[in-house]
Length: 171
Image 1 (tube, rainbow, N blue to C red):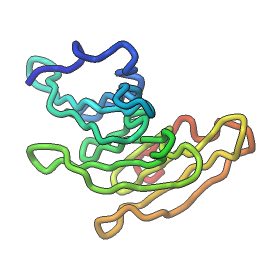
Image 2 (tube, rainbow, N blue to C red; image 1 turned 45 degrees about the horizontal axis):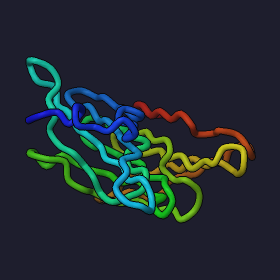
Image 3 (cartoon, rainbow, N blue to C red; image 1 turned 90 degrees about the vertical axis):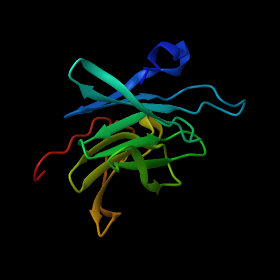
Image 4 (cartoon, rainbow, N blue to C red; image 1 turned 45 degrees about the vertical axis):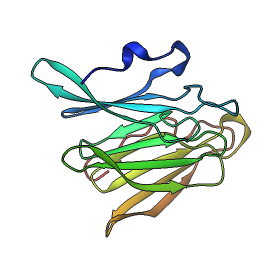
């Protein structure tokens, strides 16, 4: 397989979000211009090989700012698409040959999915708009094959609460 990095446009912002776990690397490009209405992103997935990282797949749904945030725990890939008209998070699982869509989580409010973390059965998603609103972090649990909201946390008005997220064992 051939890497698409060489074909990325300067304004795609390829590499503005990167997550690496085990043999997988996920690289977001959140601003590929594809329509007159806005910028739709994509995600490149790489797998560690004996001679380096090899491009394996490109995810490119038609969501505004798809790839602004990415996360992986090695068994699942999570991609934020917080742009206008999107406000969603997409989850993917590896079926043995490729990464396939698992679930879309919607939030019709603020820029949902600007920061992400995933570990085992837990997913944290930030929804913040900086100095003009109330930031939130939502925690989902994967139960019976579906992501279910487990808890939410509100940050101080005007803060960047949730800008950086991380999950680990029992935390």
